[in-house]
Image 1 (cartoon, rainbow, N blue to C red):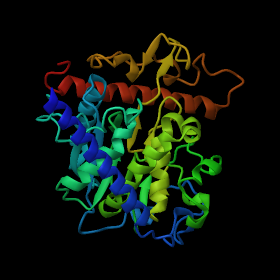
Image 2 (cartoon, rainbow, N blue to C red):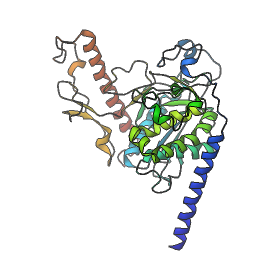
Image 3 (cartoon, rainbow, N blue to C red):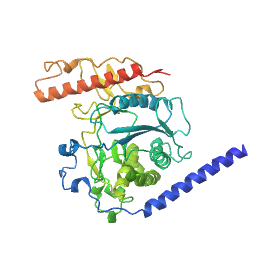
Length: 385
């Protein structure tokens, strides 16, 4: 028992010392404040939410700019079945034309290998010392990235930070360019609205609050060397935000996302805000040119095909229904509803034709999502184990 207590005390002491060291390094790291942000780049639209310039995304190049896909996860059943589906579709598209997808790593922040390290390339990271995350398990994400970036042999020069509940729907090119990261803009990340709070971590001498992009850490494609600088700051800012009651109350479950956005700005790494990076049903209505389906929201419909969000539908797809057991194979497809015709009862006279067509596209997304989940679960060996 005495040896166990001694080991635990040593672990906590080491972790606190390392975090303190990173705070000092982050505070004294040279910041490139003149680095152009997305709205100041001369060849990019002034609209802060843009599409990738076609002349760049389609530019011919003899050598691909490969990126490594990294997904942080716990060893919970909930995270594990999502990672297995995510990795299935990664492999399907990795070697396709237009893909610049390189290697893949699940960064497992449980501290121990699990039963799926042979199926999914895995790096085992240590969790934060007990109690340090204050029940906010997401704080383990930046700490896990710090460990991975320090210890892993990453061949690629770029990193895509993704999440277990991402399904890749087409080959992903390297969307970053000219030293800028490529990131999905989230409507609920609002630096201007929370300027007073954010100035605690991004003081006025660092520049305008608009230098903080409305992003989280995922999905983001960023240079590996840039991320090595950002990650320790991201960890320390996340911990500092969580310890501050005002910040914790203001940001809630997206606190770690704000911390990444702040840290990226502190190190002068701007981001192309690429709205076609991913889609989030049921609110987004068509796959179009998107690369990722993010199934974070529950999808509830009645049998007429009408969305019943906030109320459990007669048909539902919600990852949170499967926190203790894997999602089952052969899920039923969404009800036909408006996907069949604009003459569906869901299209009323008060709606325009465009509204009806948009709703139809939303149904098609549901079909695409469920079909992709079903294909993965049907083909992954020992599903449900």
